[in-house]
Image 1 (cartoon, one colour):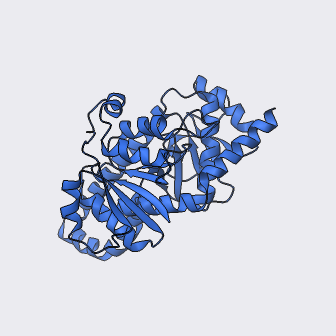
Image 2 (cartoon, helix red, strand yellow):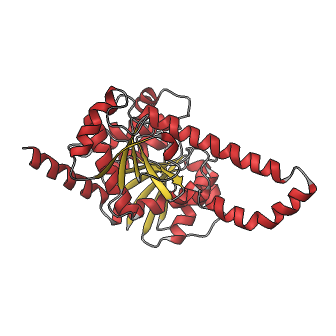
Image 3 (spheres, helix red, strand yellow):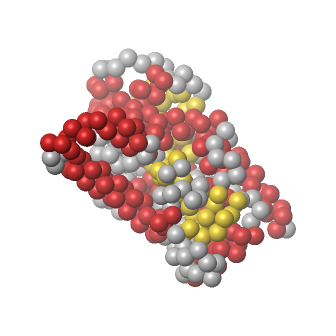
Length: 337
């Protein structure tokens, strides 16, 4: 039985969508037990509307909520009875295997590092979302957790990302590339120039060199390595451009009578194509390298996002991703010594 904490109070659609997603997960996966962390008075009345196995979905009362605009470190320290802190403590104490939240990104990142803690040998825990590409999905690592990463941190990111893509997504011998302003090895800032030769020498990954941002959507790399500032810019541009393009396509289809007719004809094919770029199928971005799994779902997460985040947690636990990360690190240390 996989025990997964769902933060009922985090996100724009909380608590209703989070509760619905938790109920869907319990009904869909017989091997799951959900611990809904949050204000009992808000959760219980909503739960009464649904049918589910009450032994596998229980409420863990947490009286406080960390809001998005609060300073993360201060909020984690001050709000000990918040749904985020309570949920992560359950993971730390071994009472849960994973934690899912659509709440404050900063609080989740800080809580993951401080409360759950990192795997021995991991220096930084990166946030790694799957981003849609022409060939499926690529893992963008790091996209927001470590803005001052060192070269050795990026090497660890590459190793963890490779393990994740091979085991969770099923990409054999995934191609790993570092984000750069050109394909040549001598290009880039100081961080990239120092990291490149380290990745080139790494035997645990299939390093293919540099990747320019324009080649990321084409799927030229399965694992896209960068520090958090660059990764976050890529992710936000990705999201904004996708939204703009979809809006422009809809605007063009509705512009004339003939285009509306044409739009009606291409709608099924267009809908199927856009569905391939639906990141909600994966539920959220894992914070890799922790002693337990923490998944950050999108701030406007729907019930589908939450349910799929739980599904991701189950697969992560089934495949023992943390054990594999520890094995790779131990192997690297022994080779160095």
